[in-house]
Structures are given as C-alpha cells and as structure tokens.
Image 1 (tube, helix red, strand yellow):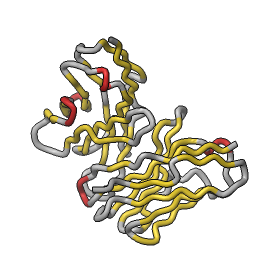
Image 2 (image 1 turned 60 degrees about the vertical axis):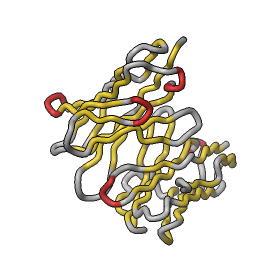
Image 3 (image 1 turned 45 degrees about the horizontal axis):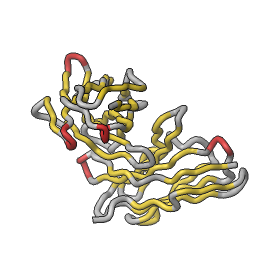
Image 4 (image 1 turned 180 degrees about the vertical axis):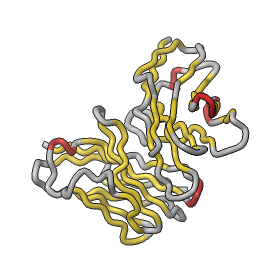
Length: 113
Length: 114
C-alpha cells in the first residue's frame, strides 16, 4: 500500500522564484497536513485540511504561502516569491477520521539561494 | 491550547543500555498522546499512541510509554537500545474530538555509542 507521496524530494531555487510542492495523501484519508521543519523552529504545522477544506491555516507564515486541496487525492503548497528563510524540509501528512495518527511523507528539502 | 515539552534536546546512551525519553504535556482534558521517530532524511513514523485505557502502551521496535495523568507525562522507554535506534524522537499531543490538530514537541535526538 503506497504511503504519502511528495514531490519533488529536493528543490533548489533562487530567491524570488515560485515554488510548488505537491502531495498525494493515502487513499481514504480525509485529513491532510503541511508541516515545515527547521533546526531553529522544529516541526511547525502550516495548515491542515479536513475533507478538502482548510480548517486551520494559522501556521502559514505570510501571504507568500498558499495551499490548496482541489480533491481528496492531491494538495499543493506554493511559495511566491520564495526567500532564503523559507529553506526547510516540508512534510505532508495524512490521517483518517478520529484516529489522530498521522502518516508522513518523505518530505521535500527546499533550498532557496 | 495544548503544548508539549521535551526537556532533553540531545541524549547519548551506550548500546544495550536502557533508555527513557521525557515528555510533558499541557492540555485541559484527556489528551491523545503520540511518540514518533524520525531517521535521518526520512519522514516521521509512529512508534506508539495513547488514546484511552491501559496507561502502559506498547509500540513498535520494542518501545513502550506510560501515561501518567498526575504528572502530565508520557515518557518513552526501551530496556535495551540498539544502534539502529539512533534517530530523533518527537512527542505529540492531540485533542480528543473535534478537528485533528496535533502539537509536536521540539524533538530529542538520540545518539547510540558502541
């Protein structure tokens, strides 16, 4: 059974460029989460969706970040324009119902020069 | 809002020694509690979780954790550490009912020496 799939696994871009991260949750899961992990701040929840609807985006850093979930099997996290301080590992996770157990993808390592 | 404290950022143990990683949480009601492990370059993987019932929870890879409501703690233990246990460990707390927001601790990095 496939786990959470994220692409790309690595992304190197220049400051000011648009970055799009992609996530395919586990089939049947109805909740999806985007996290950012850095050495300084640890693991931060950016946004989570329930049944494709954004429930809590209070962790989204600023207007440069946006996330969408057009259907139950796909989500994107976009950064426009990107800045060096956005360099981090971005994880997507999904879960089902009240189980509260989240299954994490392998992450996207983003480096903004 | 819930919060999690992992007081030890870095722990070093000898292979074969016992391990205890500390986790304290803050939450007004009975929480959901989790321990996740992250190997280098990987995503997080669930080790074990507590929702209700028996306060001693068994997980994968020989780990266990005990929920102590009086101490607001959920410490992770393993009787004998293997070199492959070297990783970063995250405690997390979630709210029962409602939406599935889980708060993660800062993590404890475990180093295992021969």
